[in-house]
Structure formats: structure tokens, C-alpha cells
Image (cartoon, rainbow, N blue to C red; front, top):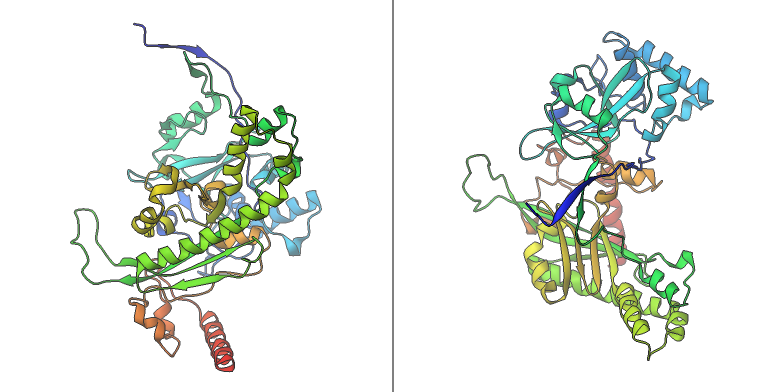
Length: 459
């Protein structure tokens, strides 16, 4: 049968860039990890206090070597040995990055295999974060969630579905480890139309035409970010389904935006009772930002436009692509593809309908939404699975932190007019099954009073 293509075998090497983010510190683990069979979470000591010492990997090693519930002595012995080997400061130890696991393996002569447990529509699946390249006799398996390692003491109970990083096929625990060592995804399709080659960038095309843009200028310099806040509307909810129960409807009430484009560096907050008008106000502001950034870039690259030849069709084609590149301002959020954009999808698409160039969906998430002036991206698409916002900004040494908010207390727009700070119990999260600490609430009171004083002084 002539199917229009044939099959050939090719050998290739897959390269994975590991995030250089220290792993350790206090992390609130979800229940599906804490209660997972075959796994010790190791997030709390035997007295119930949460660990905050960045030693989770060494605690896993201690358990692997047979430490009892009180494993702190063995943990610190391994920690001291590692720090002594690489002359690290014991008092300023941030944790071990995935890149540094190779050093850990050499010190303790053990293979370290890292998985990340994820939930999808079917059942939990284990994604391989790192397979050891060492050939030591002993192998330890650990689970990575956000910035915490947990010890997997029984791989067969830990998960039933393992995804191969090379071929993306799912395997049982019994077959996966043998498959992963030998899989190189050798079978590839060779199509009649030829193999795929990366498209030349607009700067490559200029260079072919004799117009050179310095390497440092080939990166889009401006970007903006945004974040929606919602209230939980519990009125007129749909009936419960066979497998789902409606708790509340998320209704957008405000959105904050900020940019590094000149004259737009100050945060701007929009508040409106109408979600549609809220989206329109925000988008008009973003368009203004994009237009201003475009004018700046046009002036910056005037030397390119001066060299292009108007009568040359190739020059004209590349110029058109170059202008489109300069016009397309980057808007990036954190988890925006799964939350912020789907939250306002109907109003957003209504506003952008005539300007959309393309949309990239991953399930129900908007991985990329591009228009003639804007490109919406999600920073979570470019970091390791499980890393939360707090760890993300800490990795870039950002001093500001996400503040506290009584999400479940906020159930109607009019509550924004409250003249007093909500009580401590209003900050309880049924999702995390915990409240903020008394110290955190005291900080909220201090900030509330400071803002009141500022408002009174400016009125």
C-alpha cells in the first residue's frame, strides 16, 4: 500500500534544559501527594512541625539508608558531607538545584531519579524530571513538587502511569524503567514534502539582504503583565453534575497592568462592576501601551528602514514582516493561560475578534493568543512543572511577595466598599484547609491602617 510516506530509523539525542532554581524550603503539599501510597512526603517532622531548612533531598537520602522517623541526625550528617565536599556555607544553603544532582550522585555514589506527579482527567501520571546518567549500584527515586523533594519508597505503588520523556508514551512502573533506558524514539516518519526546518527569523532575512542587526538588538525589549481579581458569586449556580459540584462562580471585578515600556512603568488598576467593560477598559490601555512601544522601536530601528530598498520586492516582504514583529507587544502573565484568559474569554475574544492572527490551545488553556498588536503568553509554560509564583519570583531575587486576600469571603462587588478590614477567620482557605497566621493578619492590619492614613492625607 502506498500511503504517501515511508519510515526510516534515525538516532537523535534529546537535550533538556534543567531549571537552575534551588529546591528546598517550606512547601504546602497538596493532599494527593501527602496521602500518596508508596511515598513519604517528608514535609513535617515527627512532632508535626513543617520543615523550612532546605534539606528535603538529604532527608530522602537518610530515609533511603534506613533512618527511622527521627532521621534528623542522619539528614544533617549527609548535609554536612555534601557541603564539606563542595565547600558550601552551612548557614546560607538555599537547596539543591536539578543541575546539581549530578554532584549529589557522586558524593553519595547513588543514582537519583526525579519524578513529578500530576493529575489529569484520567488518573495521576508521573512525568520524568530527570533520569540519572550514572551507573551506581544504588538508585533512589524522589518526587518533586514545586520546590520540595519527597521520598518514593515503593515505585510500583507510587503511580501506575509513567510518561516517557522521549516518545511521550505511557508505561506501567514495571516496564517504564527498562523502556526509559533504551528508548531513543528512533522511529521517525519521513514525509514526501521533506523534513521540517526552523523558519528563518526576520533578522536572518535582513542579514541575507545585506542589512545586519546587532545580536543584542534581536530580542524584543518591551513587555507588559496583567492580573485579574475576582469575587466568588454563589448565587444561581448550575445544578451539580454526575462528577462535579458547583461551589461558586468566579466573577472578575478588577485587573492590574504594568509594563517596562517608557511612560507605562507605573501599575494601573481598573475596577468595574461590568466584566465586559472591565475587559474593554483594560484592552484599550494595553493597545495604547503597544502603540507607544511600537513608536519607540520604529525610531530605534530607523537605520534598518533607511537601508531597505522600496523597489526591491524581497526588501518589501521582509519589511512587512519586520513591522509586524515590532507591532506585536508581549503581554505575559503567571498561570494566565489557565485562569486569567479563560476567565474573561468571551469578552476578550469579542474585543479582539477582527485582529486575531492565531491561537494555540493546550486542552482548555490558551498557551498563546496573538493579534496584530499583541501576543499573550504564560510564564508557566517556560518553567518546570509545579513551581508556584512565590518560588518563581524568589528565583529572580524579587523582594516583593504576593500579599494576603480573603478570597472566599469576597462574594459580591459591594464588599469593596467595606470600611473595616475583614476578620481573621475571613482569610480561611477551604482549598488549602488552613488560615493565615496571626502574624500575617497583624501585617494586614498594619497595611490597612497605613493605607487609610495615606488616603486621609490625600483627600
